[in-house]
Length: 228
Ligand SMILES: Nc1ncnc2c1ncn2[C@@H]1O[C@H](COP(=O)(O)OP(=O)(O)OP(=O)(O)O)[C@@H](O)[C@H]1O
Ligand SMILES: [Mg+2]
Image (cartoon, rainbow, N blue to C red; front, side, top):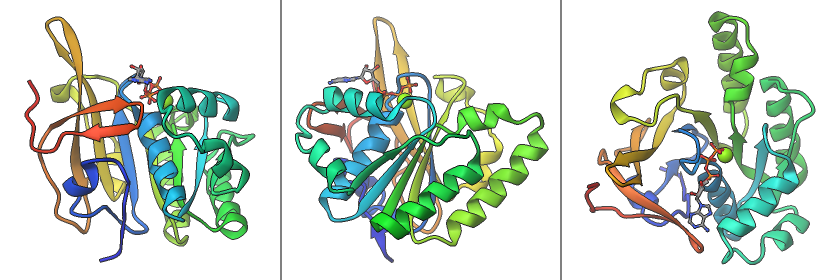
């Protein structure tokens, strides 16, 4: 099976080689859990492997994303070069609509040979809907648009609770091809980061909750280690 390597240390191993190509993955996490860093590294590593990417930012400005990510990952020294070469494209849509997001991705595929997309975060779009039914329908339409495109995507979604036991199932859990959960677990005197691959259609994967760190050279997932 064709796979897309995330390039994130440890994660590809958990996924038996990477995300199955042309699948659409939801990345869940609470505030500050690492969603933006995760999405950005997926695109950065892709760009380094000659797979161009587009980062569709729905909240922060393009400038803020670049500024924050260069601070988070100081060892990604060629971010600006990749942006100039259009291997890493960061776009903020004018409208908060999924149709507009699909449009941007389609244009990026045609113009910049983009193979990876990150949408950060879809929660803003979700909140704009008056009814759950309307959102459901639009999400289905959005996914069918994406399925016709030659691209693998990660969509971030804000989890309402940082607690593992309190995650409730939303519509996205059922329609997306894969789900990765990021946690900021509460320990007596600190918080620790952990992640799990909750589902990934079409591949076997680790079902462990594993610790991870955001480091200057990228995210490190400590496969085989226990979360204490
Ligand atoms: N250089 C760094 N080294 C270690 N940790 C860092 C570094 N830079 C940022 N962080 C951590 O990463 C967190 C932010 O990660 P990120 O922005 O990816 O999370 P997020 O889930 O997108 O947050 P939000 O909900 O605000 O969008 C910060 O709160 C900080 O704890
Ligand atoms: Mg973020």
